[in-house]
Image (cartoon, rainbow, N blue to C red; front, side):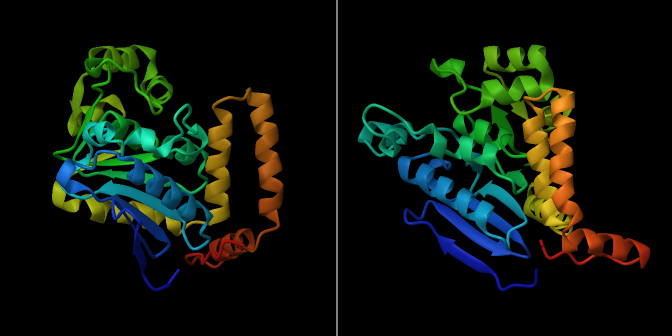
Length: 271
């Protein structure tokens, strides 16, 4: 866990990546346009999410944005110039297997969205795709899809009914309403709301708490939660035991038991 900080910029310079203390921080980096999604940003974000998920040194991922917005949706100006979302696909299809919402849904590493400002449209769906959302006091979620003549294009219609129930999801999607951070907390869409200046500090604190646990167990638990969304209870219990059996053989489980017996903090190595 005590490894040197590793950081890099993406090829487009629109996404930043840093790993420290087992935590990967991925930052949308186009503040001049409120981090709206271009084709290059979409590709870089996908690639870096996959990198974080495959990096054994990473135990938790924080996704955030630079500037006053987390992500204000798709960059319509880039779309008109041919460098938008459509540039990430062929002329006749979009490979949805390799877009951020799909990649995030398949990730085993826990994800925290540190929502630093407005998250609208695609940005809102991306925030909802993370496991945990910590919002700055000034942040907002804007479900403005129907106000633009479209539907939540990147997971909102799947996430929202599961998160807040059919009635509340219908109210939010059909009205295209914008929710303040405090309203998001009341609706169950945010885990915490903190002062703007405390956002990354709090996100890192939660990430460190996650990273201190046995990573194989954390990742297996997330995998089971994801599978449980589409399973019957008997099938799910069966799959849980299939995950549990190999965990019994890990050094981390032995360390967890030993640390408990010795009344000390465990030191997990992910094996």
